[in-house]
Amino acid sequence: MEIINIKSFLEYYEKIRQRTNRLIAVIPPEYMDWAYKPGKFTIADQIRHIAAIERNMFAETILGKPCTYNGCGKELADGYDNVIHYFNEKHEEALAIFKSLSDEDLQRKCLTPGNAPITVWKWLRAMTEHEIHHRAQLYIYLNLLDVKTPPMFGLSSEEIIQNSQSK
Image 1: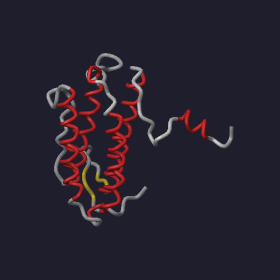
Image 2: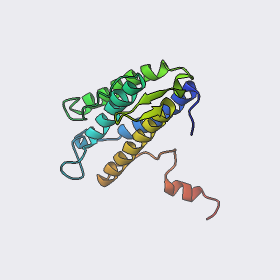
Image 3: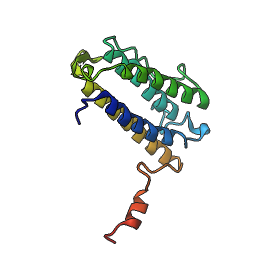
């Protein structure tokens, strides 16, 4: 997918974030510090990571600045309400940067933290893929905890089968 129009990208990205928000909304507060094994991201780490990477890596490098990502630990935000606030705040900060881009800016190069030049639109696509990747991990975490999760596109697999013409 090539991104040639910032307005259409922002509309698409908002839909991605809405799906992530629907999932985050079902997380029981008592599970925020749960991880499937010691040393792995907790649920709260996953949420802080999406936020911190979006703002401090993707947005900063698009501005031509060095990446300022420094992890996703509790020092950024601790407790359910604080983590959700941090997630939303960093997203709004990043959106302000993305909204300042012109369609022409999408074709210029920025420098990744690995010092590789990349076209801005490809970097935005990578950011979207990154969020989807971590949202999928949150689905797995919540399924391991027997937390009912929302279907991605309105229907569960079972509902699609039930409504299928090829029964």
